[in-house]
Image (cartoon, rainbow over all chains, first blue to last red; front, side, top):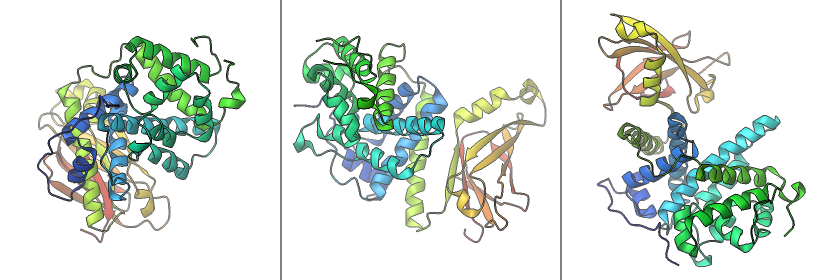
Length: 201
Length: 188
């Protein structure tokens, strides 16, 4: 299956071995393009709140740097745009967890965060299928069980969204209209929340 | 298909993911679009921050000194700073104080200071500069003597030692984004 988000870019002039050089080599996208992909997703998830978007994007770059510096990003990324979007989503997820833990008065551990976020930030092994493995890395066992209990037509959309794809890309990947993809996600969310009123066969 | 029960979808891992999915679903139906036109100043700021992360981190690793701490004062924050300032600050000759910016400065807690620093500015609108004061609050009796290093938009740097009151002052700083580093005093 061809990933519509896959792309290659010209590398900017930069000293060999620098983080930027390694980033461009491994992610297969120019730094400028990556900045735009990350910032657009951060701005969208922040509902247009510019300071919040800038912070989210910056935190996403921090995770990228950590992957590079700790040698955890070693294989070229197959779907760079989706991968970057997913990384931003996972940083957002980290914030949601932090807020949830704070509201509950509980503790939020860096260890659990790292284990989860890194899963989404690691390059996926494409030979296990584009939709499954990368998403599985993101999800806890309980979430995996919940998503696997979704009807197939909802599960595929949900997994691709978690993987960082847009509805337009999902529409191309599985051959459905964009609005159908949106409706399926909404139904999946309602079902996962225990509502289920929008679930369509 | 039966509905999921709370017990089946419970657990913060599931709920947080569902919250994220719900946010994305909500945005699908909103006027927010990922491909909306973004002002150039925003993209420039995003690029500057990304570069700052990569370059700063590279410096840190090559120096084998992971104790450096960094916070960034962004263009948006400076604009907000100016926006919040009294009208007189724009019109007045001479400097005017503007609201504090509180910033978490990386690992500064390792040196014995509260992680959140206060960034104060006395703006001279005529000169387009500000006197920046960085305030660190010691949380232990023997904090490590430190310096604050400002990296300005033109990549030049200014340094000032943090005094016994936790203050480091920088006169005539251009009103543009800058980063704040904190390093042990004996270094650099």
